Image (tube, rainbow, N blue to C red; front, side, top):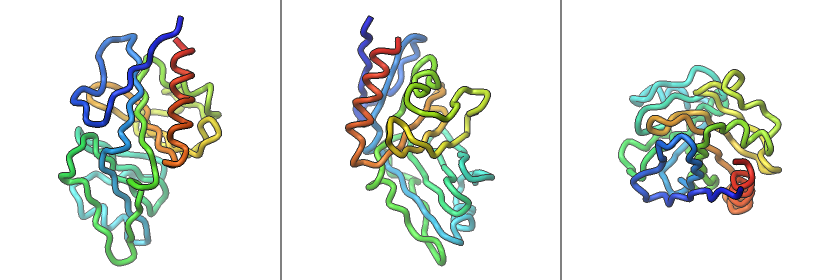
Length: 183
């Protein structure tokens, strides 16, 4: 049975259905996100109201934002809405901006088993016991370098997938194909 995956535009007010069997792949590439990197990046993030992730490849989140620590001195701040308010990380001495808004597409996957969907495309074990909420994986998905985030969007546990914008259409098509043949 071929299930239709629902695509939701970035300006849509409702991103996820609460139906148990509903599958959603959303493109949030137009949502604001900023980054900083450098020797002083931790100090710059500590000046904000955001809780600093303790280690590389982890994240903290609020109802409105996700703060990702990719390496010890690089942070990305992703907004869960199209609002620009409080979506900034100030660069400063020994901390410079990272243009992740321009460089990366952002997809959000919400299924009853996100790990099983991505298992067909990625060699990292993304099952909850190995990839808990708050985890970040820098890996390859269907031959595309990607960053996978395990977090909440509203009440739903989801996976965000960030990839190079130049490969976004390819990865979008692959994810849709897997979703349409998975369930």
